[in-house]
Amino acid sequence: MPGTITSFIPHYAPAAPTNEPLDYADLVIIDIAKAHTAEGRAELALKLREALTTQGFFYTDRIFDVADVPFSLVSNEEKRTYAANIKATGSYLGYKLRQYWHIDAGVHDQVEHYNSKSVYFRIEPIGLYSLVNRDVKKKQHPESLRPLLPEIEAFAKFNHIEILHTLLRLFALGLELPEDTFVNQHNYSAADQSYVRFMKYYPRPEDEEIKTKNIWLKGHTDFGTVTILWSQPVAALQILSPDGRWRWIRHIDNALVVTSGDAMEFLSGGFYKATIHRVVQPPPDQRGFTRLGVFYFATTDDDIKLVPHAESPVLQEHGITRRYDDADAPTMEVWSKSRTSAYGQTELQKRESGVEEEVINGVLVKHYN
Image 1 (cartoon, rainbow, N blue to C red):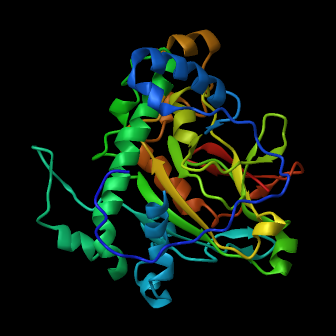
Image 2 (cartoon, one colour):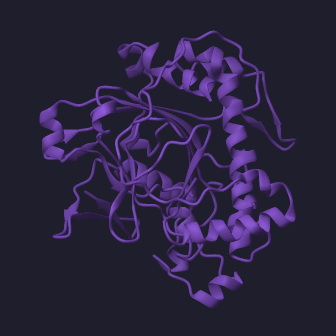
């Protein structure tokens, strides 16, 4: 990650990788360094297309040190000052404090996360980033994070421009669309629902594990187009494989785990599947440790209507699966805020299969418990 380290902060020491013989998902590993040439992009596009049409998944110390600051160096009182009004605004910006989401059987979550937007803001029409109001922006963050904002900004931009845009070109090639089709819908300065998330899971009492059958976060899909997860060693993330079995995601040093979300499924007419994933209690040799995560949640520009790219030759051959009529398609902003405000707060309809359902903006959304 580019950028200058500006402040000393404590080092976060994660748990050692598990030695348990877990049933790991067999994921495709994408070497995005190959994406620097047209030949490499063509090769990767085919691998990526295969991964996303089956499972929806494929495969730095400093950023994890930064990620731990909003949890270990901020008091509970100050956290409450910066708590997001999630249900009212449909936005996670700021803190999502523990026990906000209902998991099951009266048990609420033990996960805390801090979500950050760009430090700077855009001046129209020349499109330059202003430093004049940096102090105003800093007041929107806990005091201990303010010296680290330039690093967080650089990290956000690196994820969006260098990683996300590279992947989006492969997504487009997989649909035989012009390379920049999805890139043009993901402008860094206009994707207001995109953000960096630092997320920390805390161990739970045994009685809560029993009540929830060890589920920390029930199976779900993300609302955006792409989620970038920086791999960390505490095993807890699982995906629902095509054979209906939940399988663990293996930790790989310096790797990224990438999932596709609802918005990408909508834009691809159901061709690229939104990844169904959940978080469970870690294996025995990692219990008692906190689990620190670093994410970049990517969305399109706010005003993009989430309609399929019907001009794709691939979709014309394979057919388009629509979750709603094109005329009723929500914008990215509407879908993002609707999913965010409802998650963990609404009454779900339980089915005999164990799947729980709700309808958001006329779209059936499923949760897997």
